[in-house]
Image (cartoon, rainbow, N blue to C red; front, top):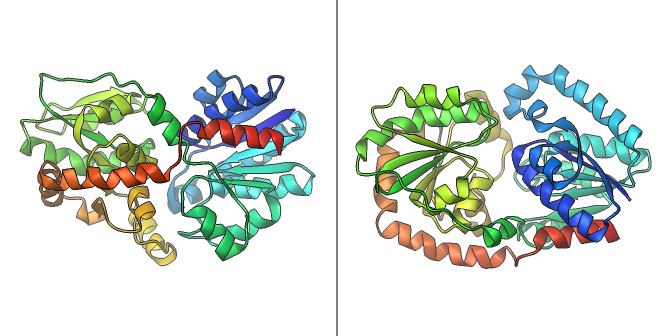
Length: 362
């Protein structure tokens, strides 16, 4: 069979690469074309458009790039028609994918949506699109299956969270700098969020000279962006590129931007705080539209505050200093205990293969 996959950001590229491997395992003669990234290409699919051309974050950024986004829709439709797949798989990226799935369904394509849009947080009307235009729906958070069934009468598939596979297969390479204990900083994977987070966090480093602060960098971001910010600091701050898991596993604690990274940090059993800074207009609109109490996946899954979240002006030297000191003490141990139940709720190894097999056979 022929499969067309649409992924619009780095996390989707990772999940997509594992799906591609799983599809080939269940369907060795599969032909796969996709929008995604380097990991998906290495897994054996044919790259048509890279996610670097697609990732726009926040209300303002989308408005500023609206003409490019509209051009991308047109190109994607053309690629689907030319490839004529048996099945289309959409990975997260709801602003783009939910629009594409309506178009595809009306033309008779079978639609598979992997990693649910967070309609429980905002834009609940998106559930109507899922119900009408998606043939098979895959959720990755334990509370989502009941939510979609009870709230929207949508049947979904929950096979666990794919991060479980990454953690189970991960073999850490411990990192050391001058034998100092490490505090890692995970500023995200998008240029605008990296600049905003690092400029707020970097001044804290000088208050902890006994620790080595290390930034989890990503190679698709120009190194000058990191280095220009580091140059403003009085401390020697290191960067490690595309080796976040080893960095986390070598760390005493982590300062993390919200998103999947909070869940990865928890599964690697590292105490953390969340720091999030964005455009003030984005925050204003989010307060009007978003219905959730927390921004980190860890707290959302627990439905209580397990890790502290600092947003906008709360991302300041005083708060970060105090939280580092707390995490180095008893609070860090308490968080690790909480992580154990989180791990149990996310399923067992082989998540991506089970999802791929279901896509192939349904």
